[in-house]
Image (cartoon, rainbow, N blue to C red; front, top):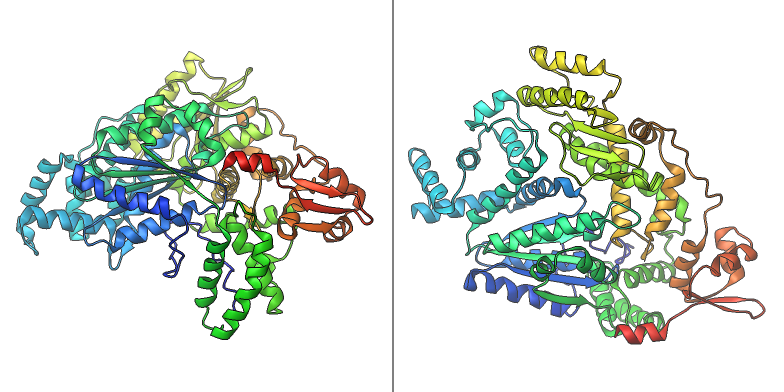
Length: 633
C-alpha cells in the first residue's frame, strides 16, 4: 500500500498541488495574497508582501496555492517564481532568465507568454483572429501602446508565427547569439559592450518591458524564495541583500501591476532589515504576515486529507488510523504548534510501522554524512542531464565565491566596478584574480572582450586573469581574429585558459544548491532542517578533485581539505530526538553505532536543545525553552 505521506511536501511552486489541501493552513497569508491581487487592477499600483516563518512552515506550498488560485481566475494572471540563487552582480540577468523560464510554463496548450501576447493582440485588433498581413501593423500598435523596444516587437512576431523558436528563446533569456541568428531574427544590434552594469541595465529594462506588456489589468505575480541564499560568505554578505533590496524597490516604483511576494525565515528579518535601505525595505514589506506552525486540529485535518486521497485505504480504516494519529500527534505537537514538514515526516514513519510496510530506502535512518553524499550525487546527476554551455557563466559566478569562502574565508568577490572584459574579481589581502566569461556564440562580441583583456594585462590591475570557455564551445574556423587573440593571451604568464566541462559545472551547481537550500532551511533530512554549518563542515572535507583544481587556479595555492575526523553526531541525535521526543541514550548509541560516552559528549554542545535525565539508564528528551516560546508568541 502506498504511503500517503511520502513525497507529500511541496518543494517547487510549479509542482502539482493536491486539490484537497487544508485551506485553514496559513489562511491569513493566503487571504492577504488574494486581496492584494484584487487591489492591483483596481488601484493600478504594485503591491509587495513579505512572509516569514520557520523552516518547513509552508512557504513554498503557499506560493503553489497562489499560483493555482491565479490560474483559476477568469482574467489572465502571470505567475513568476524566482529562487534567489544568483550572484548580486548578475541579479537582473538571472531575474530575466527566471522570468522567461516561468513564462514558458504551459497552461493547457499555450505558454504563459503566448497567452499574454495573444490576449494583448486581441485587445489591440478587436478581433479573435488576425490575418498575417495585418500582424506587423497590430504589433507596431502594441509596441507604441506598451512602450516596447523594436527587438521585443520582432520577437513577438516570431512567437506568434512559431518561427525560429530556439533562437527566439535564447534571445528572450538574454543569451549570446551568433551573428547569423541575429540577422535571421531581424534584430538590431547595439554597440558591443563589455561593461557588466550595461548588461544588467538591459536585463532590467527587459523585465520592465514584460510588465508593461501585461499592463495594469493583468497582474504579474513575482515570487522571491530563498532570499537567504543570496549570502555568499560565512560572516555575512550585506552587499547581496542590499542589491536585492534595490531591485525590489525599482520594480515597486517602476511598475503598476506587480504583486511582489518575498518569503524568508523569521530569524532573517532583522538581518534583511539592517542590510537594505530603509526605503527599500518599506517597499518590500508593504504588508507582512507570519506563517504559523500548525495546531493539533490543523494537523489532524491534514492527516485526514492525505488518507482520504489514498484510494487503497477504506473509510473504516481511515477512521481507525485517525484515532491513532490523534493520540500520537497530541503528544508530538506542543501547544505552540509544529511545522507541516515535521508533522508529515512523523506521519509517514508511523504509517509504515502501523501498516507493517517495509520502510522505503529514502525514509530509513542514515547518518548525515551518508545523506549528504547521496543528496549531492542525485543533484549532480540531475544537473548534468539539463546542462548547457549557456549556463556556465551563471553557475560559476553564483557558486565559486561561496565555495571558495568556505575553503578559505579570506577570499571574497570584489564589489567595485569591474574593468572592461572582466566579469568577476576574486581577491584576498595578497592576491587579485579576474575571471572573464568567454562563452560567446557571437565572435564579434568575443573579439571586443579579448581586446579589452589584452589592454588590461599591460595595466597590471590584476595578478591573474582566467579566460573561461566551455569545453564544448569551439571557436569557428572563420573567426581568425578570435583565434589570434586567444593564442596571444595564452602566451602571457598572467593569463590562464579554463575549459570546464559538464562534470565540473554540475559539481559546482550541486554544491551551490546544497548550500543555498541549507541557508534557506529547505534542506531537510526526515523532516528536520539540516543546518548550514553541518553542510559547510562536510564540504570542507569532501570537495571533489575537479572543483579543487579550479579553485587552485584561482588562488594559486594548494587546497588542503580540512579533516574533521569523525563527524559530530549532534545533527543525527537532534533528528532522532525530534521524532522520538524521549529515548534512552543506549538506544541512540545503538542506532548511530557509537558509544554512550560519544553521545553524551555531543549532547553537551546542544545549547539547550536536548535535555538529559541522569537515570539508570540515562535518558535524553526534547528540551523546550518555555521562556523563548512565550516571547515568540
